[in-house]
Every structure is written in structure tokens, then in C-alpha cells.
Image (tube, rainbow, N blue to C red; front, side, top):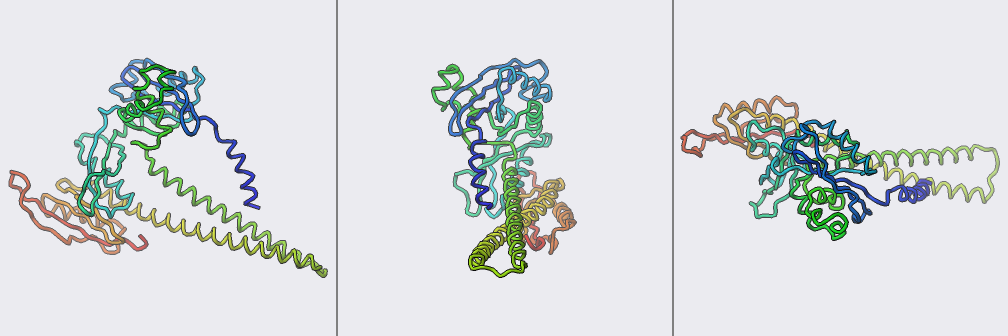
Length: 402
């Protein structure tokens, strides 16, 4: 029955999907907002419905940073409504002047969550002390590296600019789907088809706003939004869907058994045809029961997997906060987690600095064996000041189930 219902829903679901896409690319300068609206099928764009440069009121934007986010969003919504445009999503460009690029090497044994956290910490430590918090996106570098290590290309954008754009988009009633460097978008625009050149002029082929809108049909590229976290949410939705399917299967099985018991309770002699029908119903109930058990087992496996990942993430966040707030005079060079064994290596200006970091880690309730200094040695100074540098290694065992 469930399979038949799904088969009936699928044609309706396909019909409910929009045949055409409509997106907007936005690039903001100090005095103007470049706006390009593209429409097309799910496979490719076919027309530039709008390509305009809108003059901004004074004081709203400075050096590419939106100062009046709500007012800017409402103003943008007014212009889109005036043109009759209803884009389903927006793609935002950030000026290269506010971005930074880094090459960072990490151990291959780190999990995906640990890689994201460590890259965030490393990038923040490379920026000046006065620098604000940043959002990052990264990809693997294809250059040669030492065995057991991976090198990542990391780009960072100020968190304040990303949040200002999200606030402005919310005020405009838009969903931000990606936020990337304007240079990348301009490069994408140069490869657009002649259709856009013919419909909106030759200058549009070099327009970063066009390249931003084209991102809707090109998944690759930098995205300063937390897209990896969004993928985790998709996994959680899949888990809940499995639980719903399991519940429906259990309900169908229970109904089948109830009907069989009710039929058996009737004080009458069954005919052969009734016996054959009951046997068939019993077989079908067994099949439904077996299917429901498989679905339930798969849902239980997904639940255990999700719980393990959440435990790992919780522990990583705890020790990660300690490392990110390490005392002055301590530099963490490597964090490694293999099974339940956890190690951190780094350098310190003195043994007291390393011991202070160890005490902060020991205060966390995530260990079966509390952190210990397994290595502490002084090395020749790496500069002309003649100051000694201490190398340290801290080892511990995380709680079971990780």
C-alpha cells in the first residue's frame, strides 16, 4: 500500500517542481549595486531578464561593507518587485580586498569536523590580533606534500560582512544560496554563451554579477556559507524519514495482525477460498514485517552513527575551545585523534606555559585517561634573540564510544 501511495505521489511531485529557475546575482560597490536576474531550465540558463546598476543612497555601503542592512534589503526588494522579478535565490559577491588566502597543512588522520575546526583556528591565528572573526571555505591542494599530510587551500572572509549580507537578504525576502569572491564570478561570466551577450550587451559577458547568477547552474566554487553544516542537516532529515517509514510499516503490520485475529475469532467454519486468502494475507504480513524490521534496523544504525558523530563533535568542540584560547606563549602545531587516543603537539616559551595548557585540558570531562605531558624538551632558538623554545607533546584517551 505504501509503495502504491508513493507511486501516486511521484507524478504530482514532479509536476509541483518549477519548470524554470529564476535567480539573482548581486555585486555591491561603494555607490552602486550591480544586479543580474537569470531565468532558465534546471539544466541551463536561457535569458538575462535584468541587468542593471542601481545607485545606492549615501552612507549605506562603505568599502563593500553594508552598513544599513535592513534598509538596503527593503530597498532591493522594492526594485525587484517593480520589475516583476521573483527570484528563488540570491548569489552574493564579496570584494577581493576583504578576503585572505592561505595554504595550511594538516595530518591525514583528522576527521572532517576536525579539519574544519583546525583550519578555522589556523587561519585565525595567522591574521593580525586585531582582525575580526572570519568565515572560511577550503579545498584540497593538488601539489606534492609529505606522506601522512594534506595541504588545503583556504579562503577567509570577515564574518561581519557575511552576516550583514544575510540580514539584508532576509529583509529583501531572498534566500542566499552562495557567497563567493567577485573575481571567481567574473571568470565564470567570461565563459557564458553568446545568448547573454546578444540580449544584454557585450559588457555583461565580463560582469561579476552575471557570473554570480550563473553559479545556480555551476555547483563548484568557493562558498563562505556553512554549506558543510547544511549537508549534515540533510543527513539528519534522512534519518527522520527512515524513522517515519519504520513507524508506517509497523502500523501496517499491526493492522494486518489485528484483522487476522478478528477474522479468526468469528465462530464459523472457513471455506477453502477463505483459507487460501488467509494464507496469502499471512504471507503478505510476514513480508511487510520483514521489510519493517529492515527499515527499523537501518534507522537504528543511522541513529547510532549520528550519535557517535555528535559525541565526536561535542568532544572536539570542548578541546577545540581550550586550544583556541591557549595561553599567550603557546603555539599548537598539530592535533591528532586516532580512535580514542588523542595527542597535541606544539611549542611554548616555557615549560610553565605548556603545563598551564595541560591543566586547562585536564579540567574537561571528556577523558578516560587525563592529558599528560609525554614529551617536554628545550630546543635551540629559532631566531637571533637567543631565547629557548620548548617543544611539548600532550597525550590522553577520550571516553569510550568515540
